[in-house]
Image (cartoon, rainbow, N blue to C red; front, side, top):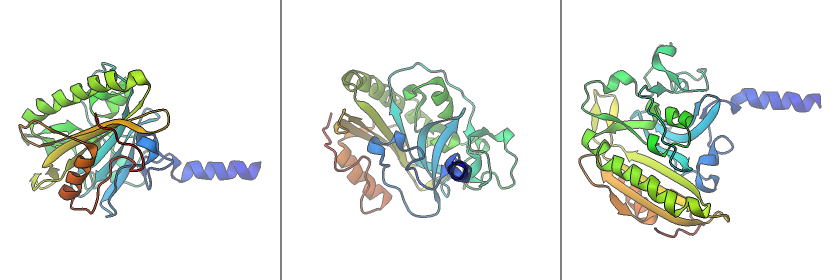
Length: 274
């Protein structure tokens, strides 16, 4: 019994609570359909984050430390909660300090030389003519704590203000209302992935300005089959996002990311379109 307790304590102390993780599996894979994450990239510039606030994980982010923007954030949707906006932005201490605390913090509470070497900071966005565009949005948050947790710069990328406050905001709200009518009454579990594609411009040679924003959802039935799914992608400008099947979106993302394939949801499941 004592040996078992000792092994358990070692497991808890050796990274079980660390929210920048080696693998999403068994850490925060509850935010992925069938607990399988979308495609990840092997280069060391990418990190996996279990977005942790107030003793709880709220969603997962695959982060690009070179471009200082996320590749995507993955989360679940349980219905409209009418959460309030925090309007203060956290950072992830462990991206710049392996010994940092296992929860997002405000910059003023993190004292570390080299802070911002591997992530965006608030000052990088000042006078940039770009919004901090949420990937996991407030409007789709499952609780007020979750809404607060979306206000981390590891969940944001520079977004054209007219796009962020216009067609993209309309899409976020339309998706939430549609999923509330189509999937939740059938007791389907709703999984959403939202991401960006790096562009050719940067803010002050630090934060990459994405060329595209994209999002996709999958509604799993009680047998973990994806019965309803859809995707959207739009250029990061005053643009109307284009609606696509998940399969077509995956093909386009593979081209944009310059990879052989890009998978959003588990291939073996049925992918019925909207």
